[in-house]
Image 1: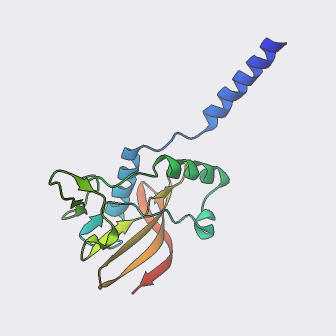
Image 2: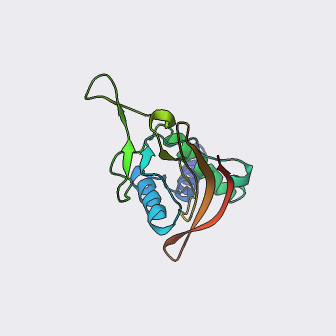
Image 3: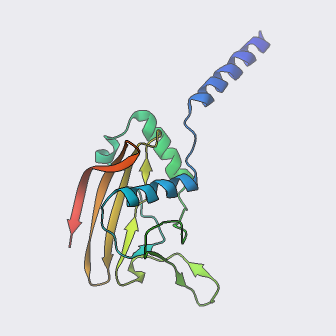
Length: 172
């Protein structure tokens, strides 16, 4: 009886684990961001801040995803909570990733948004389990220069990322 119970539990665990979507990889995140930048016409500044902002996972954003997606998204946010944008991973002509130097000439630190005159920043992308929907907050601004930001919903249609919706657009 004990062996039968153990066997049933093992089989159940196996099937449950088969249903879980595989986690994102850092490479997938960069690939999706680069595809969105290439496929869409959202405007950015030439300098990109190396830190991801907190993902905009509010009630409005949650409406775009299934309950399975939301479980997947929560897991990805916790897995990548310390991820930063690495130089040369975001591909756009003329772009540079802002990384300021500490006192030691060989140590780099994570910059804040106020470390440059004018720059863009991304939130950590909220990516659906099937990798077909992405919500991304994109902003730009600078010290004493105003700026703009907004939350954007992109959907992959015919192998291209299309801007489907936007909200919380602020221009100052």
